[in-house]
Amino acid sequence: MPVVRGKDIDVLFSASTIARRNLELAKEIAARDYDDLLVVSILKGSFIFAADLIRALHDMGQSPEVEFIFISSYGTGTTSGEVRVLRDIDNEVAGRDVLLIDDILESGKTLRFTRELMLERGARSVSIAVLLDKRGKRQTELDADFVGFDCPDYFVVGYGMDVAHAFRELPFVGVVTGDA
Ligand code: IMP
Ligand code: MG
Image (cartoon, rainbow, N blue to C red):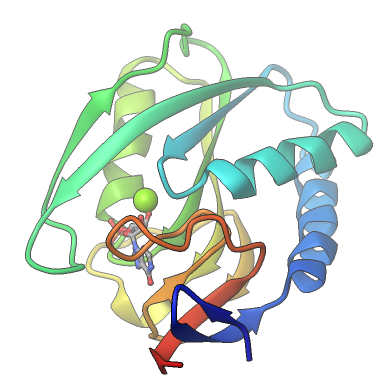
């Protein structure tokens, strides 16, 4: 079991498992034949997944534009409450096919808010790709079009995701199980 910063981390999805899945996801996305694809990566948690997924999309012959939106949700502990934009994208979305990329779909509030924002701005379509889906935690009706893995209800870290700003750099997705 890896030990990072003095903590035991259980590997839930290894780097190679994620890499294989990213290629499959890219294949699924390419098969949709989007006309004018604008990828919007939701910061901060999705930056590594987005970086890998767009390179997998390149391998599938896709050339999307790539943007970043910084969304923050306030709430108690790890549950999302009010959602707002901390840093917006620069591109026009009107008439375009937007693919939102996020790390985890949990309550659904972050992605629902962001999807509506893109639709209000006139996006022709808005699709959603997430690495992990915690279906049991949904508080609003929302499903992703592309899901890497169903995720058990653990608080996970790594591959872009943090707990208290730590562990984003891990190349795998894991669960902190205790002190080493
Ligand atoms: P929601 O779907 O609006 O509830 O929020 C999902 C967001 O909460 C994700 O984009 C993550 O940033 C964060 N999040 C949810 N679960 C976890 C977790 O287990 N580890 C790290 N971040 C999480
Ligand atoms: Mg997030």
